[in-house]
Image 1 (tube, one colour):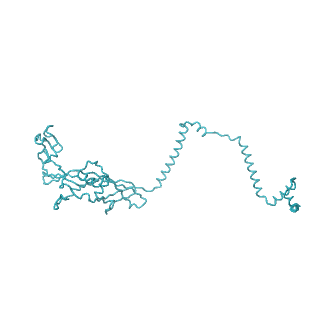
Image 2 (spheres, one colour):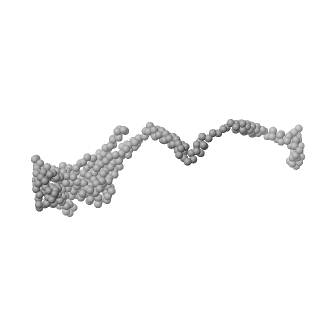
Image 3 (tube, helix red, strand yellow):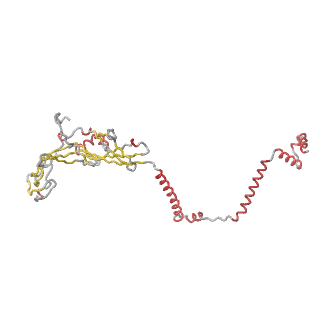
Length: 345
């Protein structure tokens, strides 16, 4: 940036600006430092941003403890605040300036190595030693962009006041396939509701701890949460589910029958039709006759199907010879009639 000199080097020693938290990590974007001395008397910070915490108008009882120190019982008229014995000068938080901003933070690469176990299947999964973009390697700017805000505005907001990002890694593994290809799905969201995030740390200088450097740091805290499930086909579970389903069907039919018999407005008709008694004894002779007639008809059809052509022709000739009705075919062809008579002879 043009505000910074080329020869200015910022000391990032002892990992002070990448402070680890439990199940999370912190990346500093802005900081402020103040040199303090022990057992000093003060009532207001040099920039008047931090006070002893008690106005003189409320009284200054000696020995009363405040957030920053103990009251001495003296009122400082120039500041209108009670005097305290504490680490002085009190912490001040000046306006943002190029001297207390860290540049290039949004381009930091973050390697998140995860490990998850499924004890029931005896499986342990890790993200591996090699960084893989989108799986274990992320840019801080990409994380902030995905946390439901645009890249530029979100980073500037977090850069000044800090923020808390929730990073969720979800596993959904099928144990019947190649488990080595089961990777988490990442999602990021901001959970500080715009209040920001900062914390303080102190570094003591001399051996008797009478001087210290109080450091207040703003930045991004990323909280990591792992969850998920793994499944495998198991025949016992399938049979259990099927049995439970059949049991539910039986219960459903019984319940429906109970409702129809007790609650349904037309339950009397339902009960009458369900328990209707039918007397079949008077109809037994008729059923037997119908059965015999059906048997006789079947026998006639069977005999008719076994009759040959010669038998049918002979029947026809005998019928014509005994019938008084003239045959028009014999009258039209007398020669054929003689031949037929010859056949009768």
